[in-house]
Amino acid sequence: MVVHRPFAHLAAELHDIVSADPIDLPRAALVIAKLEYPQLDPAPSMVKLRALGDQAAHAIKRIAGAPPRDLLATISHELYEKAGFAGNNAHYDDFRNSLLNVVLDRKLGIPISLALVYMEVAKQANVDVRGVGFPGRFLLTAPDDAAGARPLILDPFDRGRELGELDCRALLAELMGEDAEYSAALLRPCSPRQMLARMLNNLKRTYVELRSFPQAYAATDMILTVDPSLLTELRDRGLLAYHLDDFTSALRDLEDYLRLNAWTDDDRKEREQLWNHIKNLRRRIAGLN
Image (cartoon, rainbow, N blue to C red; front, side, top):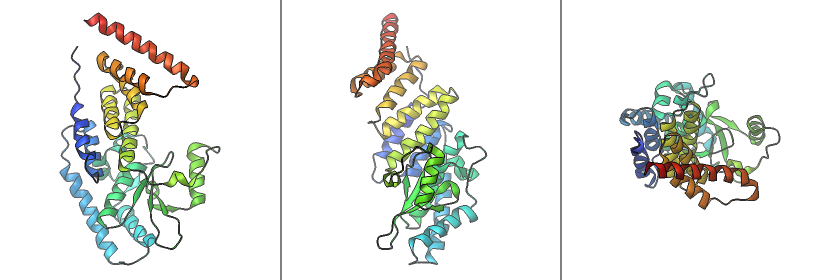
């Protein structure tokens, strides 16, 4: 059986970008946006980003030598007050909040997409800002030049507001529950690959909820391109292939997951379910031959 994959080329496009050092995050995000806009030309979005970066760089020049906190406040002012970017509170679950081209057009996004815009604008202004994969809310961090000072933490979804430790603890409790354990390790910068995987996972969840399985499969395929060590994505890709009647791909991924995963006694139920899927897939494939 021949299975048509309209988005199969996207993983290869993304691979070319993430194989470079440093990774061009905006370019990678615009490849991801092709899940919805297959013919997307990245040039107009890159022009918009450069214009935002130029504006921020110009503003930063006026306060050259200022403390990092003031530089970040200036970038936040340029991005949120002057350019008009904002968190999309009214329609947080709108999948377009995860597509960089749409975020740049509408100036609305979720924490991680706004963080990507902020990071790129700061980069063009020669200010070092990195992403933080905080539970439930993607944040930003930047070093503070003051001796012994903790890194600065910003919330890109809340107009770049600076967060202290108490704010971070309160945010964790709000998003993850009062029992969630806070640790300074939660505020460590994440890698570009981790950031891209998180963006793709947001989209994958949305596509699964919408039962848009071809896009969900492609998003999972791209997650594994970004980070092949994420074994649960191998399982999910296999299950999505099953939904798409691609039994050969499904069997390969599920057998690999069964072989590579570190199983414990607590995983007995999942392992049994997986075995049932594999046996059924083997029967189906045998029936096609």
